[in-house]
Image (cartoon, helix red, strand yellow):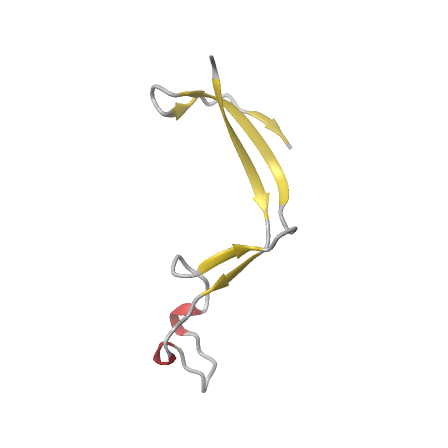
Length: 76
């Protein structure tokens, strides 16, 4: 029996949060230093109801090689 890999591209809003020590940021000048932009250290939560499906792709999947066959069928 054939298997298919389904991939959804989704846009959504997230909240990124992290707890840091007082000396990791400068509260006098509002300098967040290395925390100015979220990175892999942050914990992410998707805001419910903000998700929007932008594209769906499915392709035949070959389990033996753990690889997809690159004939995509796209549904935008």
